[in-house]
Image 1 (cartoon, each protein chain N blue to C red):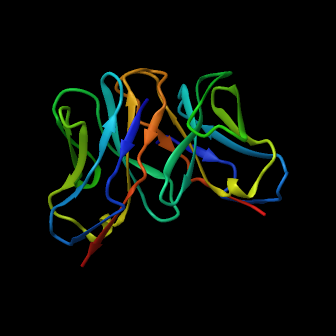
Image 2 (tube, rainbow over the protein chains, first blue to last red):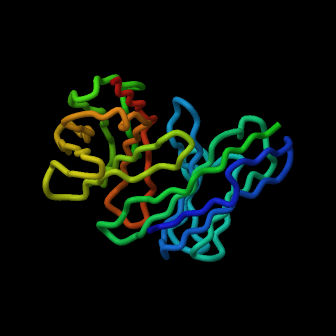
Length: 114
Length: 114
């Protein structure tokens, strides 16, 4: 089975802190994604990466950055956490080859910024 | 630009009745389409996908979805609902490209009453 592991289920951080959310996948997937999930808004794409060191902005990249130094690991960084970044963060990964594009998700990290 | 619309925030169905959860999409070129389900405090689970070929695709837990290119729709269906189908359902789309992002709808909460 595909496994996508997010380093924390719950995090509480203070306003202004630099926050790192880590995601690791074990299926040799080329694509990795970070989403945030908010009630009524569904999943919104923050960033995605289609290869090591490659990244593209999603729909809501402001206030976030990402790092992908190794194929299996994709990190989301909140440069200076704010209360409006309190949310559920979901990491996902997928193959790039046609026919196998579905994404597999981690359990999510519920981040609270106080 | 890609987008997905799920016009119903909530769908209520009696157990044993057929269910439909609606989804329409917008994407340039040929789409890949997906349905995911989310149970409380869990990550998203993949249900089914449309790539090409037969417009009716079958997936997990007895669900199926019908692709309609002229109406740009991909509605999720099940002939006989179970109480255990109660969950949050997301439709998603990506372009026919290996390095394409996946865009999700806002989600539909399905409630099955006994």
